[in-house]
Image 1: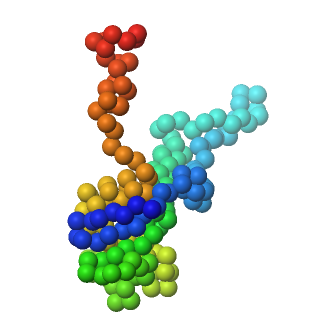
Image 2 (image 1 turned 120 degrees about the vertical axis):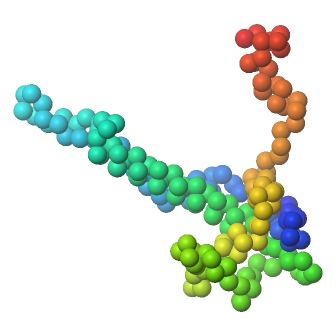
Image 3 (image 1 turned 30 degrees about the horizontal axis):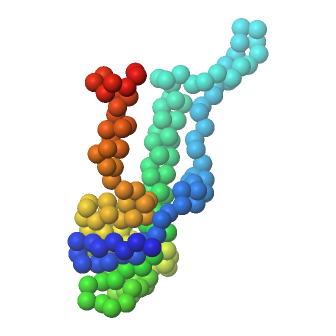
Length: 173
């Protein structure tokens, strides 16, 4: 367990998110199939052929693929936060908790964009509360590093990775 101290004074208790569990969550979104068209051959039969890049079927596939990728990103972020953030302690409080305050609401501006807290779904409400707690990009990076157990690269690691591409390194190319 890793404690992450946010700029607001909130402390989160986080844990590593196993990538294989995240992959299982990804399986809930079916990948769009590449469009295949049935074409009549000169001999009178039909053959399957991939849709061409400018065809309406291909354009629909591209739109479906973009939607699929957005859904995967959303699932990854939601899963990572829901699993990775175990509890939190607000400034001035002694104990960590997993409970969302009963009176907490998303800022009213969110409803304008169609985002509202579902009071029936405790999971969604908890997830939105955690997202609300993480107030800055720097805080988000700290949480990502804690739940992904990623650490910044050391300069030596960067140099070693770049050495094969550097003509001055003396290493074989």
